[in-house]
Image (cartoon, rainbow, N blue to C red; front, side, top):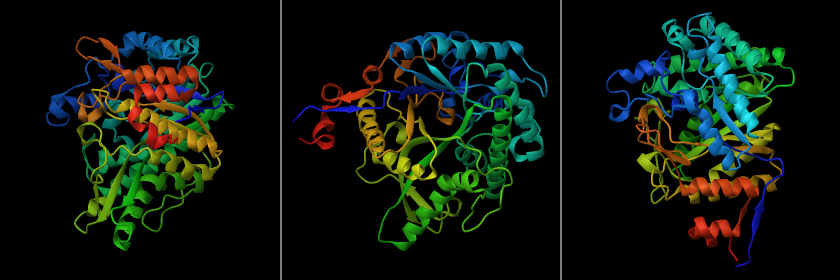
Length: 442
């Protein structure tokens, strides 16, 4: 077999992604911390606790990222630290975040800052949170403006909201995240409120920092019909795709939030994206099932015989990354892969996962799809929401009790890819020889 090298653009961003609550530790003033204290919400009764101790020691992991030759990192700020009470600002917390992003810059790592990653201050949650547009939108705008004023000389790449669709579905339709409700109408109301809040944040950021680049991190899943020849399976897959994947994009790029054939016009929302971030993990097969009304009459399952990640998290389906990047390219905006990864505690899949997914990303670049960066989820093992510590996504293993770290082989591979700005024949041969013939036939 002839040797090969898959080269990436010279200015490509190689990074990892984290979120405040999952890594900082002791975020006691938000709704997720309160949710964790109630029995039955988190698998095995796990709690975030000290998490990865980033509020005190983030720079130690920044050093590890720099040693892996990463030049980008996506992190979030915790609203409940910065504004512990309605209208009351904690300047020390803002200064700590300023030290963090400054530390990234000093290590040659460009920060992308996410302004809302699932958690809300307790005072906001107790006022109705995202269910009450008149409460949350002006306060989110105020919060965003304060953060940008504090960090804008160090950050110009902003992500307003992480995975609006996941937040709304998990918290308001499935009821497995706070506030634990199950109401389709309320789910749609929360989505509309978040879209309007994003637009308000977009405007506020550009008022403070005209040159800012503002986008969202949007979760997308491949929904394929279980039987492509079945009109009902195809219909069910389309409906799930429309609600989960497409509705938010249509709202932000066309001004409408579609709902099974129609939807309201959202004033001021259209055109409020400078870039699109894709969070991609998995594919689901969809079979029509009239009993699954909550899931739009589609029963989801993993394709028989498909590779799965730990904990039944999902199918490992690398081609989905290319399919979604190609789909997003039609909007003509810069793209980032803002999350991509899998839970794999023993690291027997992640090296192969990295190579196969990054090959699909390379394929997209060869087709002139404008992808500017890849942020692997995650740099370190972290508290994984309702799954607690049972799912391990890190390139670096973390023991939450001792805070000890250990670089996984996949972390070593990712460091080599970042340093070379390429995937080489030799890397594949060492880390994932089983995919050599399939991906790179001679």
